[in-house]
Image 1 (cartoon, rainbow, N blue to C red):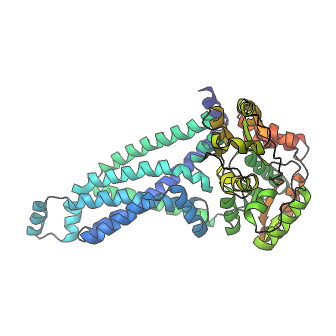
Image 2: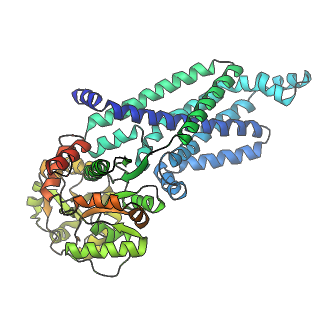
Image 3: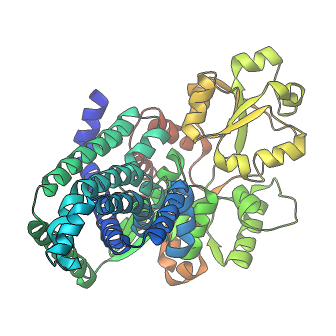
Length: 506
């Protein structure tokens, strides 16, 4: 409770912003889904075969995992609120359509015959008794859709749309249960509030409902119009991968840019996703900059037949040239520290099987149960490359987020994990890093990655970010990661303190 109270006191502004984003995304999605599903059900109430086809299609769409749906939408509509709203609308249409159609088609046939006997037109029948009688079912469908939307909207944080999912993801990544609980509890409270509002609206007459929805449309439209005419400052979108380290780096980028360029506003998108996800967002122009590592560039982002050099400078030069040649990307000078992959086991496990190097694992591969980061599991510089280089085939592999895999090995759920050389959890959980005796892992130095177009249009931003070139040692980054991940300090504060202490920031 003390942790939750402390966060509420120190981060109230950010929490309110995330809450507002979550409400906005949820209401817009619910409204659009209702506008589509209810009229569609009314039109198809006398066309049973077509209605069944629509029901089948919407049911199939609901089986698509939300993350997969977001991944499909990003190349088409980019990142942010638009793909999040589209995905939520797709999920919400089925319960609203199904309940509206069922409510309208399950009305007593005797009432239908009586209406016809009185000579009521189709529109009058609809307004006078069909919709009022079907209203409990329609409201039930809207309520189901609303619960689904609020829960699924937490994933919007993964694509830069904000919302309460930001705190849930941050809590998972930094092992901070207080942040996670704030996000989860507020999501539950929103569900209860919206449920009560829907119950209240269901008691209104159709006329009053129409007036209410008209007012909402005018308010939303007016706000959108105001935003479109209001001059906006130059905004630079900077994203980061999952974890404390990328968040620290992008906060450094933000502080330096906003110090040097007063007319520029930086929008941060932390915990944005994996490597390919971020690179696609950069290619599409959905984001402008993100920190990437040299080894990852050569293993996952460009095509090359050359062996990766273990000389950091050569690796950077090759990565820079290939990024420009193949992706039209600009890769700035890297920082000093290296954050390469490693494989780690507990001291007890290492002592039991006399493990010192990665090669030692081959003899006990049938006893190895791994917890790997999704990137490490699928990229050539991760597990696939290790399998080929060392001839290593583990007994089982589970993919999980960075902080969770360390908890898993500490709790004995797995006995080997991947990690990074600057991870504070190695010390926290008393792990042993196995020596890469065949020199498989390439050098990993982080540097800002952006499109050539952006770099050409904003040379002043390049100059600012180059202040970090050759800075930040491995021990510096380990300490900063420790403060965020273990001590639960805010990444923005840790980044700011480092820049001030090293006279990079006033």
